[in-house]
Image (cartoon, rainbow, N blue to C red; front, side):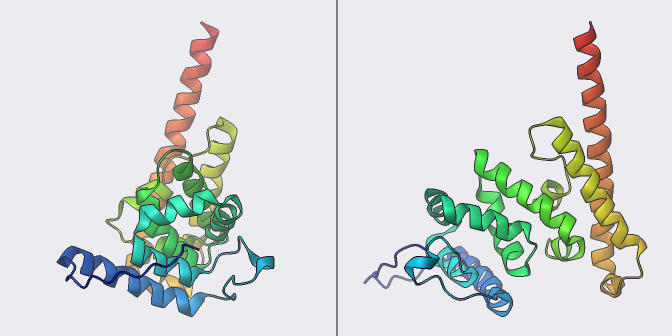
Length: 209
């Protein structure tokens, strides 16, 4: 995805860089286990992403550089967004790494992709997020859709998806921590639903006056 360059300097990196690299490498190992496609190394597959390569690029170059690179290629960016929406574990992990470093329109697109992932696979998506991570509030909060009807529909779909997992006899919910996170997510979505309806009602009332 991003051209590799060789650095002849061998200075020891600061400790926070080492810790960050270990975190990304740990995710990269999970990505490798879940990757289901070949590396995009032929002209016919340009624009197709490989999760392992993206993870390696994050390790070498950092999240912001990878996001800028993805955004430069419309096909790659579209592929990245749709990969998160699919709720594949590898792309959920990578998306969670990159989400905090996105801004503007790119952040909205990644957020919407995670909204779709939450609908497609609630347990997988929420199970990948730490209870204390800000990502939980982002993915289980108000929608990034600018239009009211799309935002309301997203909240409703996510709330139903999370609720359906909680009421089912689901073997994956033997993890008390996961069940707790799903309940937190449901509470956040319920609050977001009440807020968007209240704001919409206020807007309609103001227009009448």
